[in-house]
Length: 360
Image 1 (cartoon, rainbow, N blue to C red):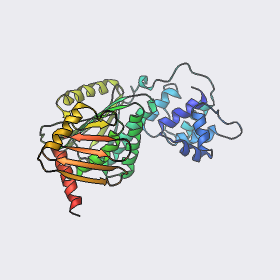
Image 2: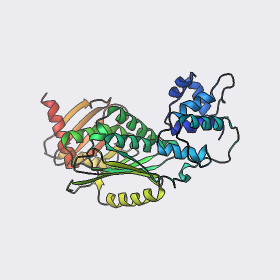
Image 3: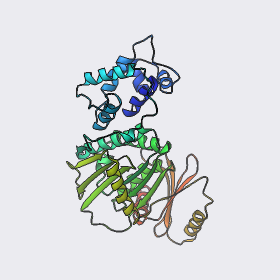
Image 4: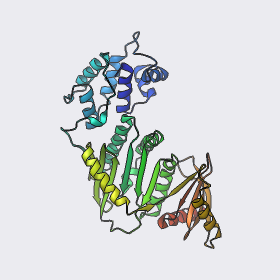
């Protein structure tokens, strides 16, 4: 890697934005951008490498990051625990102008010394989920992502800063070629269902999400979550009923574990049905879509409608629901996108949502 590629690698590994590094080093963000894409070199008129090494040394916190750097910077030897020692290693590495042949393939890194990161409770779940998305972003290549969970989602929605960062990261991945299959759990309380719809519509807009649901009742006692980066790594957790406090979350850096969990996911997926069908501006002439619209209009079932912005978003949506037929959700702003679902719990949640605002 040349010096610009090294800076780009460290920024991806630590999820550092141009403006963040620029502010820390007192440089213009545009200079950092040109450095990353190879249009500029490391400046010689101002001290850059030592402050950059100090900045990145302070960002190396997870076991995943340490393992990656041990292979790139320290010839496979585990990094020291001391921040100053890591800074010195990074300084030497950034000053080394030796060109390494070929690209760095992080999927081939060995994790023989540590098979998994483990963290606990709701805060631990959030930390590992962000580490998982940062890992995929650092690869800079399309990845298939699989998700399922029937656990209590309080840990996911209670921290708005986390939710904002998680959403931004995932939208970025989906916009850059990654593909997501998710199995939603729809047997949830009304407010949980509305929150799911609210938070997932922006992700559906990318066109890179396939949502499904399991149509049969489960006992809800033993619950499970699984998030997989195909062929790379996976997250796994379990809980009893609604209590996720203190329970462990496992982040496996193992192709073998990821492959085994992908097999489990696909077995479950084979029992599921599509949760939402997405029709964008280029496929609203689809004959299936036209049949659904015709059947919906001709039905005598009571119609519930509402147009409003979802709380906390800039999305103006137009909802049309018939309890025994289905629901159409149209995004009014931007390119025409229509979502259709006939999942019973979603239809009930949408009708309750409409009634709540009509009664205000």
